[in-house]
Length: 173
Image 1 (cartoon, rainbow, N blue to C red):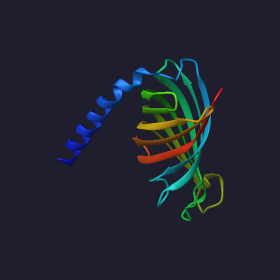
Image 2: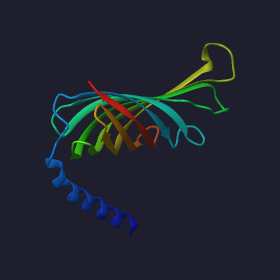
Image 3: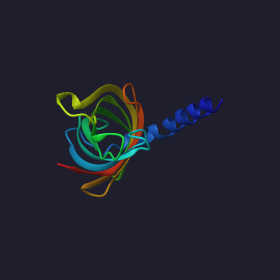
Image 4: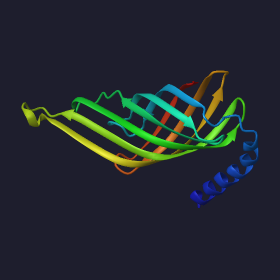
């Protein structure tokens, strides 16, 4: 019953904000580059912080595509020299696209790679796991005249299933 109520609230929310998207401020051809801090709730034993680098290009006033790379700062004592990163290619659709505030939904694909050294010596000491998945999420942006602050929660399914949130800033160029 609770899932059905959440679905109804989400649909109602989308219906309420769709009329606001007529005042589009994000323009076709705009490009953005940004940095952020990510937190992966299911990375490592208890979740881990990561650094995010992203780049986007607006195809229309309401649709943009882009990529981001998250490098997680692992601190898990059960692995030697662990590295974990993910590459995401996403498309965003702006539900609200106003001068100072934007809200969007996100869909995309995900490639994650986890590497570590086993406590043995020799050529077989490195282990790696690579996984593909799908992203779904959303985000909000606040445009402060040249600097865009954003928050973007997303769920990745397939491979390394996880929920993550990224907070950061982007610059239009």
